[in-house]
Length: 255
Image (cartoon, rainbow, N blue to C red; front, side, top):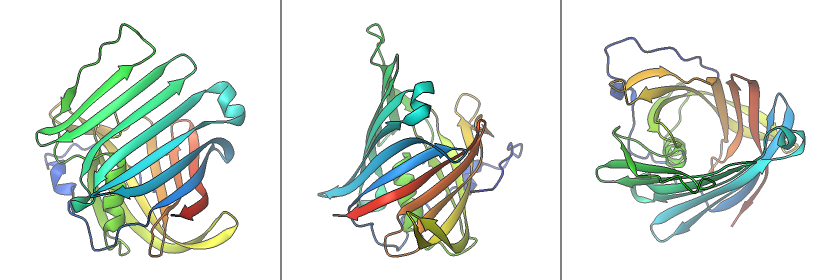
C-alpha cells in the first residue's frame, strides 16, 4: 500500500467513499493457523501466531504474539486478540484485546450492537481504573479483522477500489484500498502468486463532526495476499513515523 494520503478539506461526505458494504462472491477461507514475523527496517522485532476457525455460524480469529530479540529490550510487549465475526454478511460481533507492557496491562473490549459500536478500555494494572462502556457514533463500522475478510471476499480486479470504516481500538479510521496488481513475491523461501493491495488511512474525528484528519503515525502501506483459492495474508509493508516496518508469513497449516 504505497499510496500517500491527504487531509480532506472537501465538503463531500466521506461516506460516499465507503463500499461495497456487503461480501463479494469469493468463498470463505479454510480454517488455518499461521506463524508471522515482524520487523523494523528489515530487522526482526516480533512474532505472532494467528488461528482462524469456525464455530456454528461464527468465525473465530485469535492472534497472539509479542516483541523479541533486541527490540524487546527496548520495548516489551505481549498481546492477545480474539475476534468473533458472523459468517452471514461477515458482520463483526465483538473482540477483546489484552496488551501487556513492562509496567502496564490494558484490556480493550468492543461489542457491535444494533445501536452501534460500544467499546471499553481498562487499565488492568491500575486498581483505581474504572472503565465504562462508550459508544462510537460512526456507521457503518467494523473491526479490523472483519474488514480484512470483507475486502478479501471481493472480486479484486486490478484497479478496483474498496472503502471500509474500521475501528481497531481507540478510534475509527477510513481505510481505502486499491488493487494494485498481480505479481510474484518470495515468502518463506518460495515464490508465491500474490495480489498487491495499496491502502491509505485517515482518522475519523468523532469530536469534530466526523471530519477526516491524517493518521498521526501512518504514511503509506501495502499488503500482499495469496492469489489462489485461500487469499491468505503473505506480507505487509508500512511506512510510519519511525521508518519502514513489515510483517510476513513464515509458515501456514490448514486444519
